[in-house]
Image 1 (cartoon, rainbow, N blue to C red):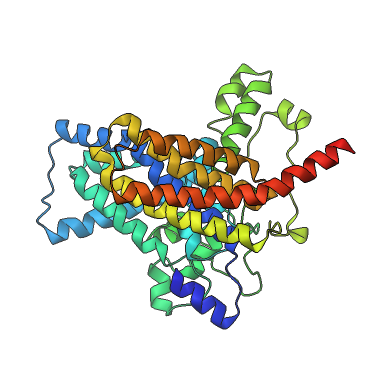
Image 2 (cartoon, rainbow, N blue to C red):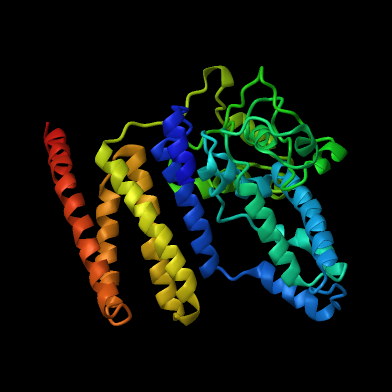
Length: 395
């Protein structure tokens, strides 16, 4: 990603914006860390089913791995396709599509609420494939998908484009143009889309417009994850039909009860007047946010390595310490609102004092000094803003 940023700057393409990149990375870091504190139902279910089913495939066989990889990609296609076609699955998956730019940071923009997708692995378990093979094949599949999130590769050789998912194919998938919506769901192989009628080639005459038809208009990762869930919950609450209260979750993407759609319409912006969400922010806020995202990424790696040694309370507190800055810097980029960051820093001070025995030695002092520096910066920047608000209220 750093290489692509360098190349993007060198060519003057302008495919990266700092605030959009921070928004994508924040949702990605939050997604990875959240998995540490939420019980992995999918892994538990798969390993449990393997206890009842006899694994028939040898993990020593190269052929078995190749077949398992292709089968995993086949079921990934259907998981991905249904995630675009069913309301409650789209509520989770839509996070990945909210970025209005398209670059390698978009690949890291992953949801924290994409639930129940593990059920698409059950057919492979029933075929006798060990759950360990399924998990590894899914990881390979995801790794392959990273590089196709780029605009710097136009087309590849025709034989490759005919079989494999390429950047051109996946740009179509991320576009909100009418002819591109819900196309090219394949992870590694594009042949599934061609066989099942969801393939669309990229047209030079129709440049992709990235994002979703109902823009997020925020860099807050929690808002990104909860936006559609909240909308469906409101629709279920306000509709008078008990039948619609249930089926709103399982209907095709975008479906809403008629009475709620009439009384509480949702504004959709026409593509002809589409403008990217790009609120102005001072340079210091952008740098402050970038530094916090970098620290959060490092902290999430540390948390992943140490999670097995932590008590649950310590794990939850460390998760909160790492996750809250992702939200507060998002608010700073959205509205230049520093007050939530000030409260977050106060909470962090209390947590660091409580964790002093755990963070013994150099690590605790580094965390303390970093916290002091951030607190000083925010207090220094917040004080004039607070005084300006007081003067405004007095007038």
